[in-house]
Image (cartoon, rainbow, N blue to C red):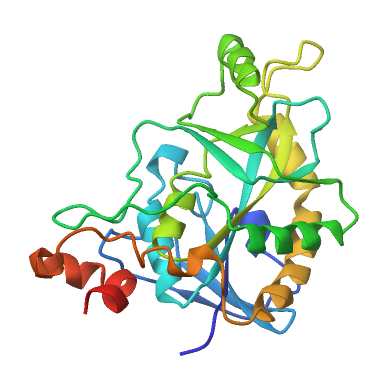
Length: 289
């Protein structure tokens, strides 16, 4: 089986890369259903990389409908150890301007209806999530974006809302009072599931607008979002060409992500249902055998 250490979750502007070679599509079945789409595997800067369109080809899947458990499980099954999420976001700060890029280090969860764990059905696990993004991998993503010359900010809190509607003005003003830095709809439950799967996870967040708190800016629209995302597409592609070899050059991982389940599984081992052991073997076998 070929080695694929880096996974990219994003949109069509990310994986349709002119520099991607030896491309093939992989259909992966998981215990949690089908991923958002076929996984595109190709060679980028001499490194095999897996690309998964979060919303499916043609953007057919709403944020609340994304089967994140299947997406993360599928990438794990290919051997992925690092996932970079390409996300659009609104800015809650004057200095994080549209077309800037943010590498956040914290998340605030305002989602309501998304399965956010692989566990349950007789198996209980409580992961540590004080640092929702891998600090080591986030630094690599930051350095890769920095090499492009784009304006990139390191650190910040990503507020994740359910959507699909954008915020009201009242909500936006209150979120600003909370001290969050950017707002979007897709970083969760990906980050939680990646940690449960012991995968290092980071977000490359592209600022598309000022949400609706900014009195001198137009209210956020899909047209505005797409225009700014497309403007940053070249930056994303270039950053990934730098990131792929940086991730491949990493030795054995020593971050907390790599052993997140070591002390997380609390259920008595002989009481774990066999069906659950089978479904989650990819994640738990080294701890429950």
